[in-house]
Image 1 (cartoon, rainbow, N blue to C red):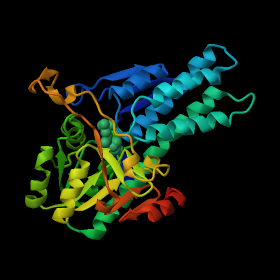
Image 2 (cartoon, rainbow, N blue to C red):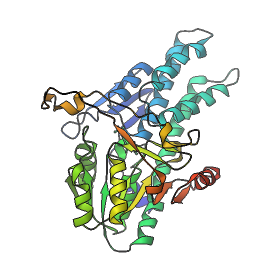
Image 3 (cartoon, rainbow, N blue to C red):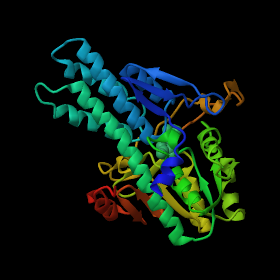
Length: 359
Ligand code: MRU
């Protein structure tokens, strides 16, 4: 399965080459595939804020490389106190987006590596290795989660399933081939998927622009639907699973994910459709007790008021929260690289976090 999954890895969103970070500009997909090059921490922070790169694991990886660029610049300044100056880069990267905890997790890992430096160490090489390690371990986590999630689908239903997904959780959002979309890919390879329904994911259209593009590229049968069609689809199209990613999971198993996920979970419960969340342990924030504590990003109202840069809405004020919180009791399973938590609660989440990764 691992080899088959690796062979299905076609799209990449992040590349680190010869000390430069390259990001596939996701704002332009699927019409144009343009790679942008980054040489400074501040530029990477802008790229995260402007959604050149997006998706929780991917922004964590980009931030780690951004920090490496910061280290290089600070060392080049020749100041003995370069680590003090580097705090500015930590701050600028940390302020780029607030909800996905992977960003803060990755910066924390970089900080810990920095604190372990000894006199005479090659700081730049060691921090670069740490960022590459973060990138590679996310790819590995994707592979493990794909296998676990696929087995969960097989355990509950053996026949090909119609699956509903939200936002984009694939290669564009991670360091590998995806979290929720990785599970869907693995299940498709095993003959367990009849069709994927991709929510359009207003207002940024991650579903219609990115998920549909990724799945079409691999020949996975995919149909696009308006977000507001989800309940109707569950009722009429034999959906058996909703499978989504996460931006932050709290100690009690509440899940923040793309706006619209919460209403999917409520609808899934009503229709007896199973609800699976797929996320690496870097998305779990045991420091927050419940989803009520998660900062929810609100983006510019123009994302709602305009379509393709052209104003379509009346002269009205817009409220644009881009994530919501699904309470743990609406979730059937959280799949991570450390294992699966079914019917999550605080005790089960704490047990999970004590486990080692399965790969
Ligand atoms: O605003 P985005 O596109 O960064 O939001 C992305 C999501 O909500 C994804 O579902 C989540 O990050 C999981 S990606 C593996």
